[in-house]
Amino acid sequence: MRALPVFRDFTPSELKFVSSFKTGEMTAESGAVILSEGAHSAHLFTLLSGWAFRFKMLDDGRRQILNYLLPGDLVGLQGSVIGEMEHSVEALSPLVLCVFQRDRLDELFRNHPGLGFDVTWLASREERMLDDHLLSLGRRTALERAAYLLAFLHERAVSVGLGNGAVSIPLTQQHVADTLGLSIVHTNKTLRKLTNRGLIRWLGRSCEVLDAAELARIAGWEGLGERVRPLI
Figure 1 (cartoon, rainbow, N blue to C red):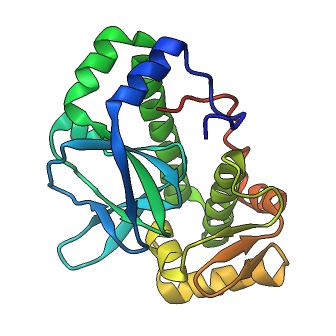
Figure 2: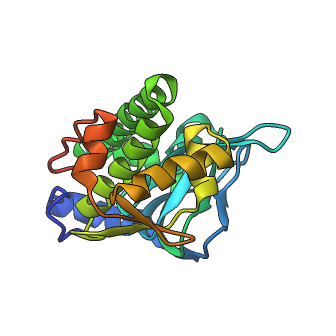
């Protein structure tokens, strides 16, 4: 992952610390819950491969998907700082996680201010993405919401080397419904409109984006605008 042009280079001292900060790697299958709301975790993770998502549940079982996690994203930072998770994280596909010692996070900030800034940058980036998601839920039409979500996931996937043309996103229509705040029936009708326009191809448990630029145009979304970003 360090070789991908989207990620900034480590200094030698940063690379040495991150190598010692890492305690191992963990794999998970699709559907596995990595972190649970209310739980305390001794670890912080970076997603190395695969897809995951963050979500919250209501008492009656209704689920709201908050955001999606792709390679290079930090997982569990909220629990590391606050003390317990206020959302859950589930694997959307088989994945590999890099495992860090949460109790050494203070050392990272104290001795490696560049890495400390990187962690802050990643948290700010997450806030920015959530702002866009909230705008979509509050003001976009159902068609615009779906177009935005798929354009957003496509751009994020391409940026970390998961495809250059058609990108297959491993999610079901239920995931889309739980992200956009729509019923499954309304979601199905909306995605069918995008399919009929030749913008996506639905493959059962995945969606192939065929025209990300037109999806972004429908949503009125200008893209992430990211250049080089940190990797922990």
